[in-house]
Image (cartoon, rainbow, N blue to C red; front, side, top):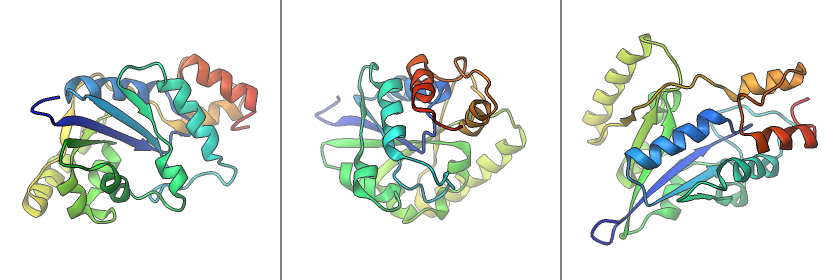
Length: 204
């Protein structure tokens, strides 16, 4: 905390399921943005992604608690699930904003490139400092990222900053596919999450 201002991170997503890439991103976010606190917030109904009809937000929340529960400075929060309906980031930022706090919002490359299509992007840029992390090795995206940041600077007076670190190429879709085909996932998700998926028969 500096001059009485808390640096608070917000890491939202579907987390279906949460995996080691998510955990590594959270650790980098806390360290590089010098956060005092990080809220991990599973979405209720994500507006930008199609989720399985059998999806149960309670399972996703429980897995996040298992994955992040032991991490210092991290709070797993159910506010978007409890709010019901589609989970719009701007609503979460409004709920968490305050004069005594500075908000930082973490997202992946795909979300960074489409941020201006979200609900109330001007308000999102006003309420927080957006940050993205690369989770893929795709040099073609570099030019798109530069172009988008130029647009954001011109339109909103702010860019999306990048977290540095080793890229962990993992996707929740890959994990669900491996579970469905009977393959192991212990190398992809934290051990308690793998145990939870197995004991609850998820993604089969």
